[in-house]
Image 1 (tube, rainbow, N blue to C red):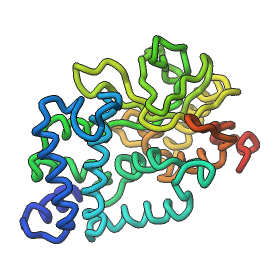
Image 2 (cartoon, rainbow, N blue to C red):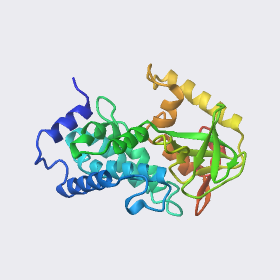
Image 3 (cartoon, one colour):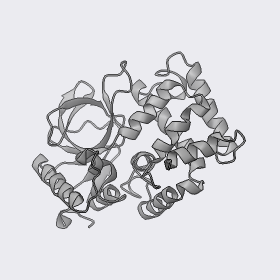
Length: 293
């Protein structure tokens, strides 16, 4: 039995006149791919000129996935996905503060790359990758989508700055990575950030990208989050929520014990915001520590 991704790819590829993907979406994706291919250096061309070049690649990849997802979401095979996202959109109103602590960038990445559905537990990203070449996409665009699919949220310790870059280290680990923060927030040493990091998309880029507006916890210790992750992993293992071949922390931070686990945390922990950062307080499984629990 094939995967849901295989079924979707076969259905789209089987007919060039298929109405599965709206003609307007087809034209837009095709235009994006052609324009990207015609630019000598995709890091500096088009409407993204003036932005950080590494961020540009991911921005185009996200736009590409969003356009294709509009058509795929109407397919019978994606019914489970549509229901999960529809309910989440109604529940969390992902527009950013003051309407909701869930920003559009955060919610879009979750919806495209973390929401699993179907018998083979696909995401929209894993469904789109097999058909990406149907639109003659340049290799760097496909590579960007693959890296976004592998990404996840995480808790990181602010370890200072290096010029315009922020140095982050995931809690409980030793590796420090240099990061660009497109939102502009610099922060201060010792803060805990809840963010999604994307790695350098190619050898011309050297910094990771904090791809969403940072969620910042100022008054908590690293040890508190290490202990929380250990407790959550024990609970997930007891309920057989972890896959044998998956890295436990990656599984937890990407999929959570349930689809809306991290969405709920952001809403319950919200404590304020400014134009370049959103502030949280509390440990996910300690109810009395969360201001909106």
